[in-house]
Amino acid sequence: MKLFNLKDASQQVSFTEAVKIGLGREQGVFFPQSLPALSNVPALLDLPFAERSAQILQHLIGDELPKDTLAEMVKRAFNFAAPLVKVADNQYCLELFHGPTLAFKDFGGRFMAECISLFSQGERVTILTATSGDTGAAVAHAFYNKPNVDVVILYPEGKISLAQQKLFTTLGGNVHCYAVKGSFDDCQALVKEAFLDEELKQKLGLNSANSINISRLLAQVCYYFEAVAQLPESQRANVHVSVPSGNFGNVCAAMIAAVLGLPIHRLSATTNQNDTVPRYVVSGEWAPTATKESLSNAMDVSKPNNWPRVEQMLKETMFSKHDFFSRSVSEQDTRAAMLELQQAGYLAEPHTAIAYRGLVLDELANSAGIFLATAHPAKFKESVDAVLGGDIALPQVLADALAKPCLAQPIQADYAALKAAVFAKLGVA
Image (cartoon, rainbow, N blue to C red; front, side):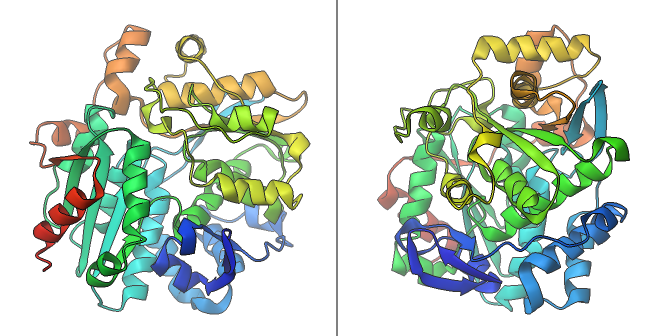
C-alpha cells in the first residue's frame, strides 16, 4: 500500500511506515495514493465479519502483510459483534459499543495494537494520544501490559464523562494519563507539537493512536460492510449512513467504504454545536471557533484532524459532494432526538441521537437508513438519566472502573510542562 502526506506530497510511505510514523511532515496525515474498488462486494457480504474484514484490509494494504498473518490479527482484534438493530421502517442503528471499552474505537484501537506489536519488533514504542472521551479507553485497553510499549493519554480535565475517564485513568502500569487544563483541541495541539520534537520522537519511539493513524482508519472501514451485510438483501442497493462526527475519522472510513464499492449513496456527517465543517460546506471558509462543551462531549472538536482526508476524496470526486451532507444539531434537538428514540423503544446516548437526527433530516426516500451508536448509553449515564428520566444499569466493566481511584496527573496546556512530566514518568534523561 502506498500513501502520501496530504501536506507534503513528496513524503510517500508504505502502510508499515505510515503506521509507525503516525503523523507526517508539517503535521500532515497520510492518505492512500489509490483506492481501487472491490470487485466482489456481494460475495464479501455473505462472509462472516472477521473473514470479510481480513479480505477488505488485504485489498487495501496489499502484500505488506502475509494473508494468514493479517487474518489472525483481524480475528484477535474483531472478536466481538457489531449488531444492526431495526428501530423503524427503513431505519437501523449500527451498535458499535460491544467491545471491551463499550465504544466504536475498540475496533481501530485493537487493530492498531496488533499492527504496532508486529511492526515494532521489540523496539521501545510510546503511544501518545489525545482523547475527547472514548479513544483513551480503547487505546489504553488495547495496549495495556503489552511489552516494550508505554501509553500516554491526554484528556481535557472535567470535560469528559466520569465513566469515560475511569475506563483508562484507573489502569496504571504502562498507561500514563494527564488531565489537561483546557479543551480537546488543546490536547490535540500538544500531541501535534510532540510530533515535531525530534528529541522526543527519538528517545521515546513516539507514535500516535488518534484516528490520524492509518491503521485505525482502515479498521473502521470494515464495520460499514458489516452493517450492510446485516440489511435484508432487498435494502442493500441504496444505503444512507449518518455518522456522529467530531474528529471526522469515522465518516472518513464510511466514505472509503463507499469508494471501495459499498452501496452508500448518501452520507451525513452530523456534528454537535461545534460546527466548523457544516459552516465550511456552506461557505467555503474554514473558520474554527473556540470549542463549545456539549452533551456529546466526544464530539467537542472544532479542528477535526481527519477533515483533510474527507476533503481529498470530495475534491477528487471519489465521492459526490451532492451526496455528502454535514449539519449541526443543537443541544435542544439532541435531547429531543433522545426522547424520540426512547418513544420508538430504543435507548440512546447523545452522540447516537445526533446521528439519528442527521439521518432523519437528510433522509432520502426509498433508502435504507443506518445511524451509528458509537458508545454504550451507560457511558453517559448522568446525561441520559437526566434527559430520559431513568436510571441506567451499569455494565460490570463500568461499575468496576468507577470503583477504582483515578491515577491521572493534572497538567497545564503547556508543551514544556508535558515533555518534562513524560520524561520524568518514563525515566528518560
